[in-house]
Image 1 (cartoon, rainbow, N blue to C red):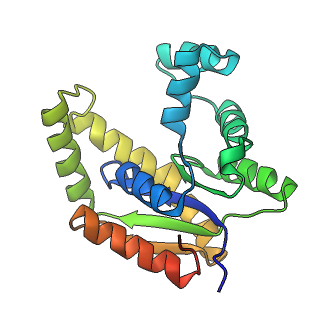
Image 2 (cartoon, rainbow, N blue to C red):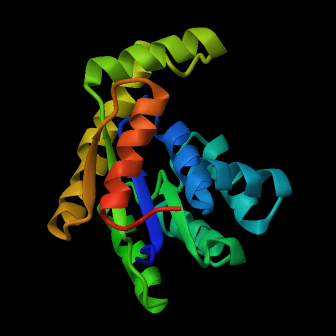
Image 3 (tube, helix red, strand yellow):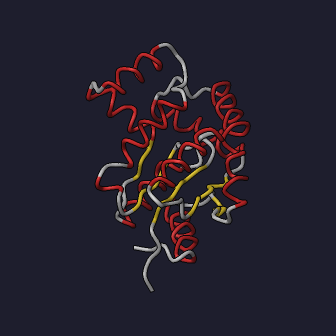
Length: 197
């Protein structure tokens, strides 16, 4: 049986472990993990035209607008290493970005093959983020800012799951357990869709 193309999206609230799991799954499948945060930071560091725009927006304390975010992601997905598949983390994060991604993939005759939803109770997310803040000395991870970010996730990002559920491509994964247990759950769900290394 041939493996289905791995064009994946991993989604979950802050503190769900999606960054860690995304990298693990992408490495296992031999595809790039495309995190918008990482792509933004790389563009800023390299001083690209997009990077300079992003830096000015972030320095002003604003969110990077959808059109710029979509342009950066399109740029990254057009690179050779993403031709055989990719795993998106942090994009799309709202319905406007879903439309942008759909349009880009349709131009290439492609579509997402699976959406991994890491399901973690709110209390668990807050606990993990508070622990991370203490370990890494992250001042932005206080209880108030964590609650605000979770509220944005619930109001803006969670609704995109309804779009993908209607397409039948969402696998809800229990995000509580050891790293290996969660990775195994994701791998099994993808294998059931004929997506494997």
